[in-house]
Length: 96
Image 1 (cartoon, rainbow, N blue to C red):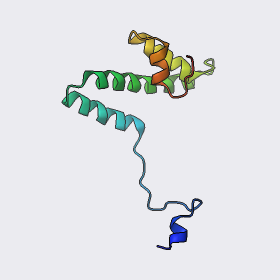
Image 2 (cartoon, one colour):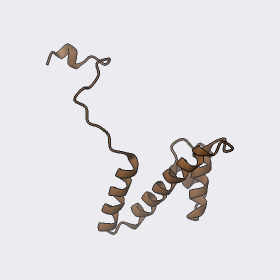
Image 3 (cartoon, rainbow, N blue to C red):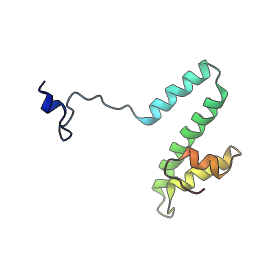
Image 4 (cartoon, rainbow, N blue to C red):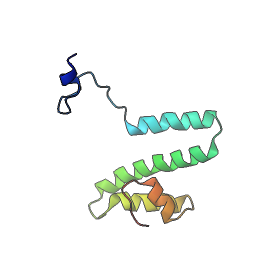
């Protein structure tokens, strides 16, 4: 391969790998956390999985103005945590 073509930032990657769906990655990580009995990682992964499921439902409802924040706060409250956990849970949530 030509070095100029290799370093071209506008070139498309034809041999790039297809990314697996996020939900599928989380499910496989949950299985690994269960296998290694990692409770803290399992707790956070389950919260993230629930957040993604609730986020899809919140996007459908047109009355919800900020679905990412709403879903993040709902999941944090359901597991007994506060806004800091909600902010860590959602990369788009900037409450604190």
